[in-house]
Image (cartoon, rainbow, N blue to C red):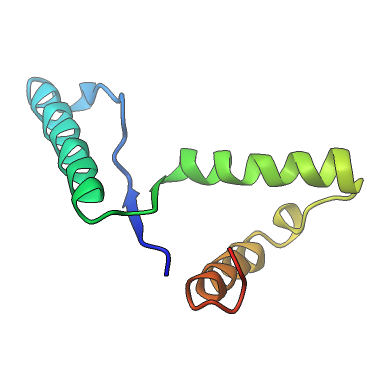
Length: 103
């Protein structure tokens, strides 16, 4: 079985200027959280660490879009049915994690 650690909304590299003096402390807290997550992934022998958020979604879909446009010569469903496409991704993950689809 695949062991997955999912991290979301870490806002890595963000300055948090809108928080004023507390922005630097927020950034240090998030960096410390990332260090703890990496330590956890190592200790638990995690196979895959997924860091997601808006940037993660765009980066993840970008590879699929390149495949659709340049190799399959079609338009991905993400553009016309984004919610349906996103839900389908989670169904696929469930199928991978339960062994219905071989990884």
